[in-house]
Length: 163
Length: 408
Image 1 (tube, rainbow over the protein chains, first blue to last red):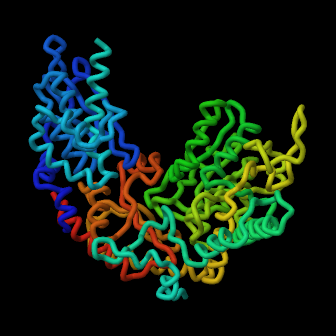
Image 2: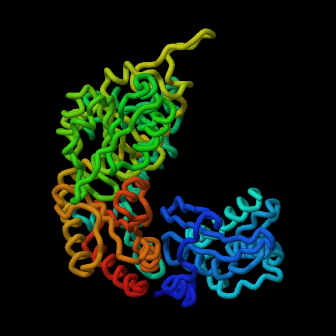
């Protein structure tokens, strides 16, 4: 195993992959279900969100689906990170995680020179998620890592426009 | 018998090292590597005589046109076509199938007409027909699989009842299954249905005779058979091509254009609007020459031997490995899809890549098939003229490391 690969498959990633958090389903409704697909590999993920409309908080989250270790670990870490958070906090996490993956969707004119990264990451505690930073060196796998995050974002968008 | 060591000297890319390991290229079913004679033929065209085809009256234009049309002859002869006018150059096999769906399909299919496909088709032979189904109300029926990964023809007669077209792959890009085409073609013709064969995986690996298949349309591409990407072909019977309306309109495909309309060019140029992939065609001709020198019987014999060796090595070393495809090498080609329980194909392939072993991971553009198999993805190793038993050993060793790393 090269150091290159050890960078990708950090121990904490393998831990989430072997023991994924928040697996399962929630009854729909009241929970909201959003589905994501990775056309590259055929992976599918369903994110169940139990949202409190009053406090705009993710009360509970469950995950169904299949995928590689990177997508499974990223999904598991995402679920642990956003559970109990407000929508705003969840959205900041999404932005910060995408910045970590070198994706800056909010500033199309930006050059991605690092200042965007700093702005997106400011004040956000990524914790375990930082272990996924090694994915950036494997561009094809970035889609694996971001699948669940895009699906969460889609779910939040649909909940908020539906309200 | 193929002298692999001498063949490998023609493929400089195989000398490459990836992270200290000699590259082991096992993804030829996706796209093959290119030998020196192909690269040289294309270089020569650009260095020595390049011009547009069928246009200029100057010497270089004539030389390029002659080389371009000579390539068409070579490719046509390679698949047993009776005339080069039946061989239409297109961008790739996907475009060949779309050409049939747009031109023949839209001229001939009405609501309620039936197109029969199989569960082992590539998206290229599924989506164009689904688009037509959505537009025209055409009904699609499916030939399913037997437990040993062959086509289940037990209800073929009912499926073909009312059918106008049967679309079938000659060899599955996922399972490796070689389909016995002639009985399918005969059954379809008995129902007055035409037959389109997706021969992408077949033409590079086995001697092909479209007359023996008796099919009506055959689609294939250059890049899987040692030629360049960017060019493929549709072969079809002359009478069918004559009756079909043109596909893309523009230069080259016309005989005459007036303010109030146009008339079409002769075959095959009627279907070749715009400047074609000129140098790619010339490279494809060189690839055909190369395969002819090796001999397609030898190519097949080499791949059967490698496939048997790989199936034996994989099953002996990994009793739990699931292999999706026939075990009988006489009815399969050298594309082997496999999966460990609880280890995703992406993870396997990532570790293999760490050792310089290139395999494909994913759904292989055959999602309907993957759904039938109840899986999302497989890893696939595939072989060609330059692969060796030692490379299969390297695959097995790298797989052992991957399996150990990801075992839950």
